[in-house]
Image 1: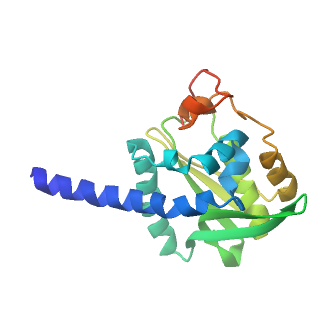
Image 2: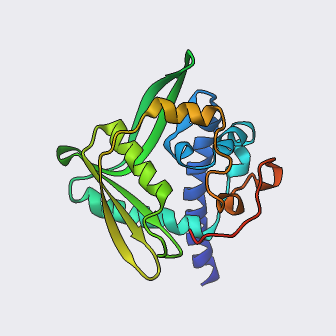
Length: 209
């Protein structure tokens, strides 16, 4: 019995770590900016460029999120959605070229509909501001008209409909590059893998993610 359980654990570990390791090389590229970089602490982006290996992790909460994404993604794919849909845009800031990249959980091209899936330990204060902003950035990049933000929590399943609201991508990327918000939210530091080497670390109240 132990061997069988171990083999499943091994499969999960290989799946999670393979995705993270493949992303490491891209994370080192000074031209690459991720959509998720635009919605959180800006200094985290700069630390990740210097110390990308510190982002490697195998935490149960994150693994659960990946499994939920995979399961719901399969369901949506069977209904005509394109899952893990990659999106990118070239952005010029002060004469330098950057590539903004992201991956939408699901996209229904003919309807202009974007779906973002979130898992959370708590159903308090939903939807989260940074999740709404992330979805709005995706809508801007895709020229999509609307999106659905769906939360999967232990006590609640809920979805929020979001209409396209113009986002100035160039301004958002510039704010990231000049390190304008560190942290953006008071709770971010408690969950950041760089907190022990960050000069802007602020001990504070945790928020259930």
